[in-house]
Length: 372
Image 1 (cartoon, helix red, strand yellow):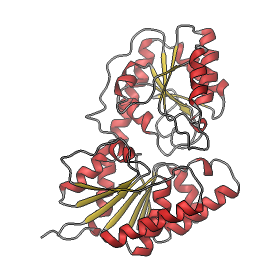
Image 2 (cartoon, helix red, strand yellow):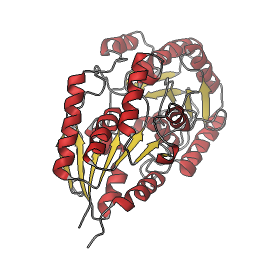
Image 3 (cartoon, rainbow, N blue to C red):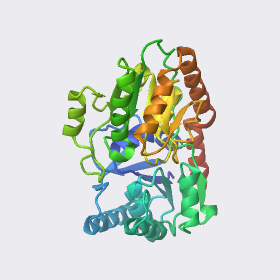
Image 4 (cartoon, rainbow, N blue to C red):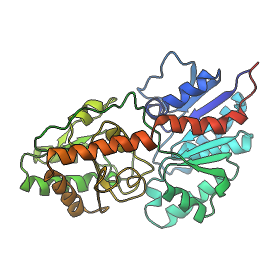
């Protein structure tokens, strides 16, 4: 008899891009998989038998009615499928899915891949979200974190017991898909920011820093790659981005399902985010042997070691970011190449996707039914 595993995230794209290695490992053991997520343009591979359930999730909204409906939809799904385990990713599946799983008697395994804007500043919203996590994770079977800072915060606030937590190296990277892109060219640098167009990703600091650096290094290029997210509280509108283009500060490359050609063409990948879980963009760029520039914040500092795999700068400071990019621009190609090679070596040593899959299978194995 096979086990049923329900997997949920705030988009089908999240599952297909970040969790496919895990889904394949679960399926290889003869288990049945249900993916519950909002429908989008992402397509699950036909070679894996996966049932999909379209689940409307308002990623950024705080409407209590829609959130209550989401909870009841999860609960109904668990009562119908009676799965052996529930794996959740992203904030609302973690909160409302884990809460419903606990009430339905389904072991919930959550992945806190980032704390979102609510935890970036103290206040009523941070207290409320913390209370929701405490309630939802009270019955959780296990909770994975992607950096020690987030884990420590949850333990200090007594949201979880330490015995129910573990650390993961992010979502991991498929090192056969993300391979070294070849040597860097001895040419003016191209700085690439890969992220949704959100203020909390440091996009405006990147643009301000780009204008300052361009005044000194006129041949340098600054690129933005990522989609718009108008429902997010820190969303940057398309018109603002297009104005930056018209001003000649940055190039907007749109969004893509395959970041590899853009990373390969870049000299360095930049992420001036205010806080992260463990950013996939930096892991993928490091796996491809590209130097990294990022803010010295939880998540980013786990990947970027200043002077070794890249350069760290101060958070929310365009001046500090500009100094970091100028420092990189002044390096010769051999120095840049050394940073990229060290980034690849670090990803190989610590962030291989196989480590993430192994950690999940160790937790899942005792919950799965004996085959026969």
